[in-house]
Image 1 (cartoon, rainbow, N blue to C red):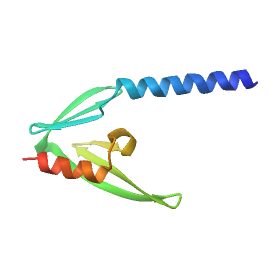
Image 2 (tube, helix red, strand yellow):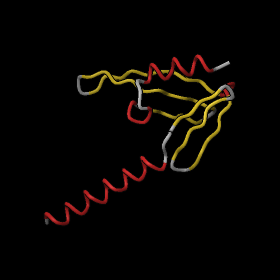
Image 3 (cartoon, rainbow, N blue to C red):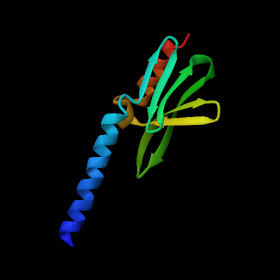
Length: 99
């Protein structure tokens, strides 16, 4: 039983590691717009179609901030782990880049 549990945990950890390697960087920005990478591919968004905001929620006694990027009917949500920085700082950078 312990061997099976260990094998399942090893496969799950390997899958998560591969996902993290293949989909990075998740978000890149330049003066033309944003590029978002997901498991389904790359999405190029131009600034006029993008709305970005930081949403703060309280969970398990802690405040957690996420960056929400809305484009049309799509909503992309990024946490600190995906961004590698505080979502508030990333929003400030995106605001400075947006024409």
